[in-house]
Length: 142
Image (cartoon, rainbow, N blue to C red):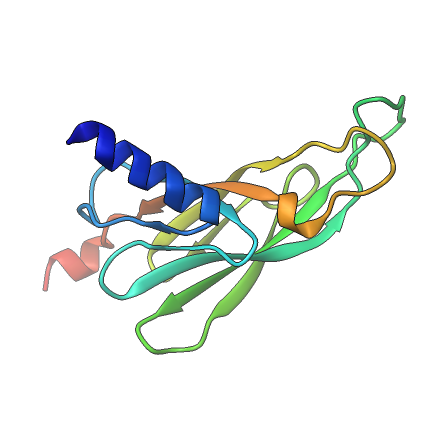
């Protein structure tokens, strides 16, 4: 049974989709999403990988003065509400954002460029960590 669950999870990851059905508190989750993929974090919150706005990372085969940066666009949806987009960066800007009570961190963008030829959009994968933030103390007192 465990092998079947692992195979299903691997297939979902390969498609860029991932559904998390565990508790919404406790340890953060890590997911790998393709462009267009999303994770259902709980009954109402979804986090998606909308695209790569820019990718100026220095190719592995080149010698660069500047390491470069990639800008990843994520979206968070709550219930039937609109998707709210934000941008996370691999090097120069924020790689983390707080949206709707969740701390979302870009851990890695793959593949890493090997040359200056660019990467087809379908090959990108974003590894994200999603953690539920603790309720503020004033909410706990209610």
